[in-house]
Image 1 (cartoon, one colour):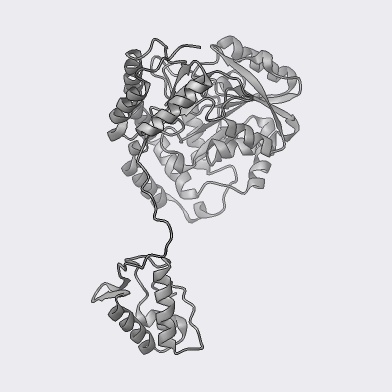
Image 2 (cartoon, rainbow, N blue to C red; image 1 turned 60 degrees about the vertical axis):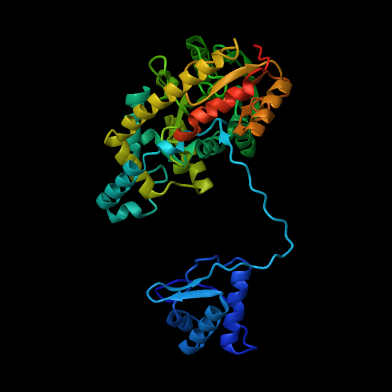
Length: 461
């Protein structure tokens, strides 16, 4: 509590004098860690008003605790909790955790996040926003952002989009949960094998079944679509985790299936902007906007913590998607939507992607060069995205290398360790997230990875 000041909850025992009761409550709060060292306390006047007692009572309690060393008080800076050395309680001491470098996939280099650019966009967006923009708003998202997204994905990813087709989501995880609800009548959604286990869990959580689509050099196999499936989930531009591109013939076969079956293709374009050896692969959605749901997000281009994503939804699915969105109760905050619209329309998003694309291109090249000195086994997939797959002979070898990496100070992920396969028995490999380490740690991470792999008898599938 503390009017126009700092809130502090303390229980004052009416059975003893007020000043002593305040002393007891504050000692307990400090001793238990509820009030940490340096925490500022309310002014004596503010706490007295909140507790309904005389200010002198609080002054006396503070003075006693300052004398005992629990609190410190200085003119101009108020009263704060002292750095108290508490007696040992017999609880086990925390063991320092060794700092390790993370080479698991799934995140960009967060040190590349454009803090100044984003904060400037927030300031400009809020300065230009009218009061109505802070209301509940359209469940599909801010009109400004939907227009900006439609323009961006049409230009940069070849999507056939209009603002009315765009739905703003809290990233792809939220988008897939919404789509699974909207496609409840589909019965089964076929997903890539290997593919993210978390995506399968989201689909199951909506009451749908999943079925595996084997992934080969040409991507997912449309011949594996079961008769009961009403939708398929694909990563056509850069399959996760194999890294292969869905072939033109397979794209055509999936689209033909969707038209014949009255089904849908969910296109997860999770890192479609990041292709290093040639022009990024265009979106599958452009070939049939009535059958493909295009999904994108800022998670790899900016940061996953922004929780900003989008769907470009076929006309027939728009009402079911909006109904499902309302059922989840999750929407993106207006300031972030307006800021992203600013970043997109000014071209800042494109410029940031081009800068980070250069960083990740260089890292992937350095990774491939270093691995070439250790093994004849090539990285699987195309030069794209923020991760690469190093095939291994067995799940046992994969687990051994993951454990050795952790012991050496680097976190690694494997096809089996991360549960990518629908069933046991799939091929093994390390999924190396070269985009994850911060700039200052990349070379050390590469050196440590080399130490782990050196001398290992790595053989191809």
